[in-house]
Image (cartoon, rainbow, N blue to C red):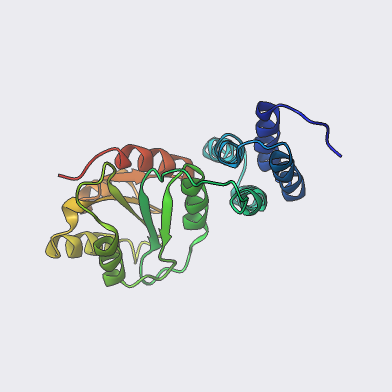
Length: 227
């Protein structure tokens, strides 16, 4: 049995348990948060999300790699499942919506999955289209989730790990233009062969070389209201 401790200490321990990839400890700490009557929302943001943000920073600095990030996300979800189902849990207002998908012809989705976890941890709602996504599906998702008057911009994140499928990200942007939806969404692209120059050439709003950068770009883009 853990002794009673302050919320800050518990939240710090939660963050550390995420970065050290210990799902059982995360679950135990999450239950302790509820036993002590502490805020599930604060535990989610100051504990679990803080831990994933640290993992993102370590990943960007090449201090850890894909397997470690995936294990950390597993640990985070062990606590999320407990805290999000607590009777007193009141979800915070989302910071915005982010649509994610790997373009048609490409089934490499590990990077996209890491971005998904970290963007969710940062407080955004994620609409995950998956991998090998037909180009019209991106347009349908933007049409479905775009709304006028929002204080946040809708963000579309596309990835490709193959040079042969990279041009399809540009095709999606062209389809958004034709559908009259381009002004309603900010487009972020990434993937191993993708470059900032390529992003500019196809008319994307931003480029992210890694998951940590993707979160920072999503936060920046989400604060830009569509014209």
